Image 1 (cartoon, rainbow, N blue to C red):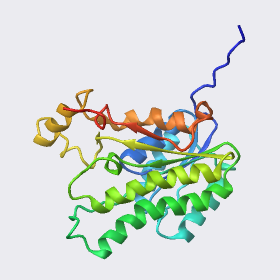
Image 2: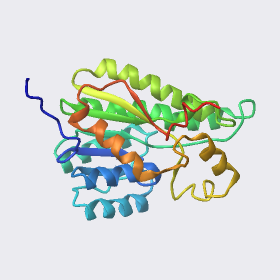
Image 3: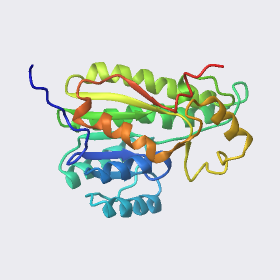
Image 4: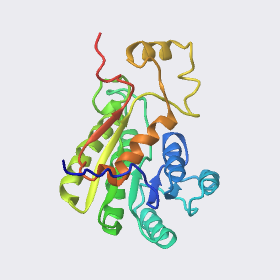
Amino acid sequence: MDEYTHTPVTVADKRAVVVGGTSGLGQAIAVGLAADGADVIATSRSEDAVNETADLLEEQGATTARVTCDVTEPESLENLREVAEESLGGIDVVVSSAGAISRDTVVGISDDEWDFVTDVQLDGVRRITQTFAPAMDEGGSIINISSLAARLSMANLPAYSAAKGGVEAFTRASAKELAPEIRVNAIAPGFFITPQNEDTYAEGTEKRERIDERTPLGRVGEREELIGATIYLASDASSFVTGEVLTVDGGFADSAF
């Protein structure tokens, strides 16, 4: 029998940028990458949040940089890329996790509100890809953060759902165009507890009970449970994976009654 080799699932020595990486799921991803041995820059529009997250990354032993970024401004993204190249010596992994949401209805949402959500959620992913792909080394990995809302009907989320559906389509288009040098995939998280929503998803609430009942694993996720999927897609272990959307939801999306 031929001897088979296994590529370790690790991002040790990778150089990563997590846009939208200073709160919620994005922060968990950034710190998780650093804990596994990557050098990481986590960025957002908030200088305070950037500094706080940089402290967490440095506690994990990662090289980082403190730089804010606004995904609606190409010049801001270009500055981030330049800082990352200078501070990290190159870019292997980019995670697009910047977020915006509106809970206006289909008939009630204004043009301004629609444009704001799609500008951040969809055009932001496009701008990040256009800015960073030319600077990434061969074998690089881009990971876009989607949502179950891209495929499931959820009330009062028309702009968010449309944007996330676009993220998944853009992920597949990018994967085709940027291959073979760069892989592009997405992660679609289900319901996760974060500091921002812990009251909404607290045990005993009606919403939490409905989610738990429908989810085969019987609970919502802890945000640290998204780290493994990210490390896999960022690592060389997924070297033959591109154009995919990895759902991490405890089985919620495929559960039927």
